[in-house]
Image (cartoon, rainbow, N blue to C red):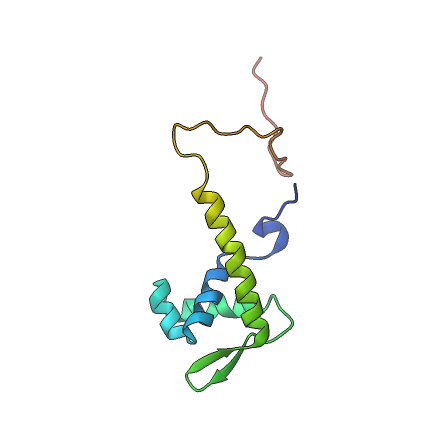
Length: 118
């Protein structure tokens, strides 16, 4: 299994909902209200997200942000992926139900050795 953690990829997945909300709202101010975040926090998250791509994501139109075609494409793809994640979590066994056991636990590259008890 690939290690897709933030430490190995440098991608903060928490930025995705912020990006999607700004696309939906057309402004950082409206997105900040819907996300219950400060405007500077939304602005910083959007800036950090935009640095992951070599293409502009928005065009400023006065107080509004107009998503580029590339941003609209990204939004559609990310909404699909987030939907799949939500579906998998919703279909996970609840407390008391049997949970399938994986064949092997994923390895952790920086695991500390377990001390033996003698």
